Image (cartoon, rainbow, N blue to C red; front, side):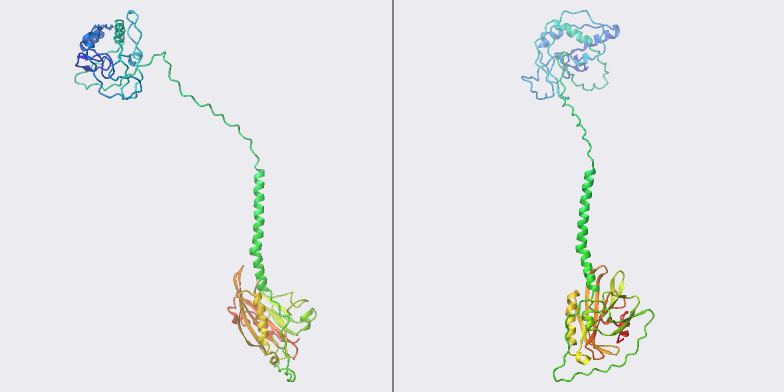
Length: 456
């Protein structure tokens, strides 16, 4: 029976020369035990006769094949069934060796080391078996065996030791170490750039914002403010009166209509806070001076008198208005004129024509204009003719506003050639007025109708 002095494994075949696990030369168990006992008892180095290792009987024995398949190697002419003897790495890193034995004859050159083995558990590659060394190598082998530490003594009841990975032969010191991979040249940090001033950027941004603000303001005025002002002016301003109105004329040979006697109108008793308006010819010119008529009426003191009425170039004798701050119309009352035949009977034939002409002018100035009704009317003791209309002003600051209007033609009572036109406008901003039927009936306009009088 033979045993490996390195791993301690035993082999029954007495003709096997090397350990199949780590490739260490095998020795007889009796020789190892005797050497171990002598070392323990005397502490001296034991020389083992290696004549038995080189016997022809052992040389003829074939080496057992390693059970694991070696990995494919790229080395040329590699024979995995050959065995090579190499110095184990454990012998070089072993504890301090015992005293050096007497010098031996010079040893033959050491065979080249085996190539590096692959990663475990793949067995290391082995080179071809060298020729039988000369007798001088026995002395080297003896020195190597003498430096091997004693194997541990295992009891028969203990399990076999764990498998030990095969040692890789260390390359000779003269062999050059593998060069590290070339390192890339160090990257030098770029020189810091000088900081630029942010003042030009800030000034540019402010300039662009200023231009945008100007464009937005212009667009807002053109598309929002201007249409609102135009609609408000159309709502507040009264449309122009027709430059020419039909004048009733009597046919040749026909009797001239006699003025109808009008019952005397009692004087009006104004309420507290009422203001009287009396028409005057002092500041009039043009058509108003030519068709001047004497009249008067009362209006609430909280109403606003239009300064553009009753002056040169005006189209109305008087105009007063009830406003909702800042300048939205709630109720409006204006007095104009028309050419008359001198009495209600003489003007009756042309009242419809007068209403149509004036209605056509309103349709050009009021959005969504619609005439609602037309027919005779009466203002306390005065007989006349009227028509009513409605309109809508949309997209104002107060939303959509409904406009209701009423126009009354009153003939002269003294047989004169000019009558008066009473124009009343109300909007949905007046809380008392709900429809066109309430114009002059509800709200504050009834004061003007009840207090209207011809004459001084």
